[in-house]
Each structure stands twice: as C-alpha cells, then as structure tokens.
Amino acid sequence: MGRVGVLLLNLGGPEQLQDVRPFLYNLFSDPEIIRLPFAWMQKPLAWMISTMRYKKSQENYKAIGGGSPLRRITEEQALALQGSLQEKGQDIRVYVGMRYWNPFTEEAVAKIKRDQIEQLVILPLYPQFSISTSGSSFRVLEKLWQQDPSLQKIDYTVIPSWYNRPGYLQAMAELIHQEIEHCEHPEQVPIFFSAHGVPVSYVEEAGDPYRDEIEGCTAAIMQTLNRPNPHVLAYQSRVGPVEWLKPYTEEAIPELAEQGVKELVVVPISFVSEHIETLEEIDMEYRELAEESGIEKFHRVPALNTHPIFINDLADMVIEALDAPNIKFSDVVHPGKQTKLYPQERWEWGLTTTAEVWNGRLAMLGMMAILLEIITGQGPLHFVGLL
Ligand SMILES: C=CC1=C(C)c2cc3[nH]c(cc4nc(cc5[nH]c(cc1n2)c(C)c5CCC(=O)O)C(CCC(=O)O)=C4C)c(C)c3C=C
Ligand SMILES: [Fe+2]
Ligand SMILES: [Fe+2]
Image (cartoon, rainbow, N blue to C red; front, side, top):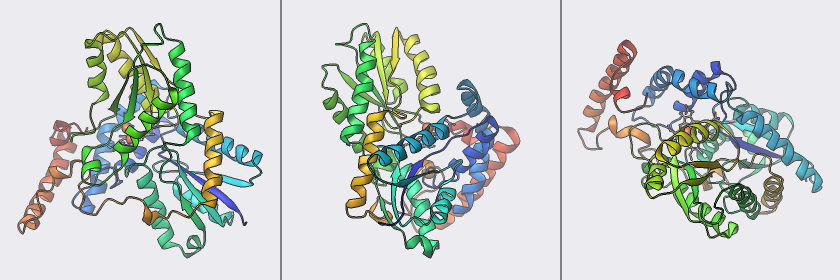
C-alpha cells in the first residue's frame, strides 16, 4: 500500500470579524446554495448579499467571542482521527479542506499532491448528505480532478454520508443520555432534534436525500438511546423567502410550550462540531424564545467534537472504506443544471418559447433591484428577507 490520506471536508467559518464579509461572499457565490438563472448574476448578487448582511452576521459572531470555532475543532478532530488510525496500525495522514474559508479545499488538495498521496478517502464531516454541503464540496473536488491529470492518478473513494454508523449513534446517544440525567423529569422530558434546514425544492425537485437521511438519523438515535421520552424533529437556520423543510424550529418550540412543556432537551443533529448555529442560534436565540414561550428549563446537548467513541468510529469508517469498492464523485447525487435551487423562481418564469425574452427582461429587473438595494439600502431583497 502506498501513501494513504484522508481528506476531511467541512464548511469553514470566519475566524475573526473581518472575515465575515468575504466568507459570506464565498458562500453566496456557490450555485449549490443559491442558483440564479444567469451565471453572470451570481457574483454581483453574492457581493450584494454579503455587503448588506455582514453587519448582522458579525453581531452573531461577536456574541460567540468574535469568530467561529469551526476551524479549531475540525483540526482537533483531524489530529484525533490521525492518532486513532495510528493506534489501529494505520499510518494515514489527515487533511482538512473547508468549502468557504481557510483552510480551503484547494489548499488541502495541493498538500495531498505535495505529499504524493496515492490512496485517498474523502470524508465529509456532515453525517447526512445534502447537495448544499457535502455535495457542494464534492463538486469543487470533481472540478479539480477534471483539470489535473496528476490527481486522476490517485485511487480515491468518497463516503457520501454516515448518519447510521454505530459509533456515531452510540456517541450521540451517550451525550443525550447525560443531558437528560440533568433534567428535573428525566423520564418525560421531550427530546427536540434540531436539524439544519434546506429549501424544500432541494429535496422535492433536486432529489436531495437530506430529509430522508435526517429522519433516518433521528429514528436510529432514538432506537440506540432506548428511552421512553417523546421526541420531535424540526429544522433551523432558515434564510430568505422560499419554503424550507418544516416544521421550523422557531415555530415548533412555542407550539410545545403551548402544549404545556416546561423542560426541553435540544439536540443539534446536522453538525458534529460546535459553531455559530449551536452556540448562538440554539444557545441564545432559541433559548430566549423558549423562555419567552414559557419553557422554564432549556438544555442543549453538546456537539460531538472529539468524543472518543465518535473519533474511533471515524477511524473504523476510513479503514473499511479503504477495503470497500470505490465510490466516485459521479456516483453521488448531482442536481440537474435546470434544477431550481433557492429563490430562482423570483428571477425566472417558465421554460416557454417566450422565456428567453422574459429572462432578458428579468435580468434587467434583477440589475435594477441590485442598484436599488445599493443606493437606498431598501428594496426587493430586503422585502423577501434575504438581507
Ligand atoms: C442560504 C442558504 C443556506 C443553506 C441551504 C445552508 C445549508 C446548510 N448549512 C449547514 C452548516 C453550516 N452553515 C454555516 C453558515 C452559514 N450557512 C448559511 C446559509 C445556508 N446554509 C449562512 C448565511 C451562513 C453564515 C452564518 C450566518 O450568517 O448565519 C456554517 C458555519 C458556521 C460557523 O460557525 O461559522 C455551518 C457549519 C448545513 C449542515 C446545511 C444543510 C444541511
Ligand atoms: Fe445556516
Ligand atoms: Fe449553512
């Protein structure tokens, strides 16, 4: 066996307040997050959304200490995984590639080339697959591979998702169990799974398996936990005007309060690291909402970070993947080019013979909207909630 590597993929997050704006620009430039009918509009729109949104976003990062801990935690996970592989007799180097911030996926791939890795396991740190997360990172890699014959020599395999791994489930169940034991009524307290949302169109039009995997993951964790507590699944972090997966976390919490729930255990399930959506959105915004709604005790289960059972399972997953048939980028879900992602319908109406004319007119309208937002700070994008 030649030199072996693991590439851990994650989203990345701004490390300091001044990173927030360029980070948001990178995120909204991604057609897997927002896809517009005209590619040329992508960058101006990303520039505009990041310019108008960054101050609000900076406030949130300020509230958690001035930056995202995602890089630090992901690098700790990488080190722990490398150590665990070493203990299992595997001399494997672990690399970290982020989609929208440092260390970028491209830099990780450059290191992999420099180290002359011959066999590579590509492992996203998202337990469930979504075209907006793992799928987007795979797209970047697929392009790099297409452009570079030296990368094509690497014997690589992809792990698309792993939400039903026994070690992951056991580690999650252990953390939930520990949190429940701190509750006033451990036998009755409802377990509230809060998954990251995606627009419904990703699932229903683009074929994203995300909702199925989230539901499968929740059921598997409950089975592993083996407790009588009731549980609820809802989706958090909605951005913009289109319909996202429901129920929304911000509606489900007050509904539980109305039903008389006084104590709640919240479990973030789309992430394996603490980051802004656990530390700010759940710990601050949803906690406040819960308390205002009448829920007196709000508990949050910590993210796995470097939980030893989880890291050990990641190591086993890598070793198993090395022996299993390879999974290629082309084997993983790709949304079609015409698939509407995000609020595309606001810019494009139908594929009729008059669509070309309409598209031209709408492009003009789009540009006018952008100018209006820039000049006045108000306009259609504020109206639909994107800014
Ligand atoms: C606008 C659309 C977005 C989709 C779709 C989306 C999906 C998605 N995201 C994560 C995980 C993370 N998101 C993070 C940051 C982040 N995501 C969006 C937007 C979408 N995400 C924005 C605008 C931001 C920036 C933060 C903000 O301004 O609110 C992060 C990084 C967090 C950090 O600590 O910096 C993660 C991680 C998942 C799992 C997901 C779909 C399944
Ligand atoms: Fe988000
Ligand atoms: Fe996100």
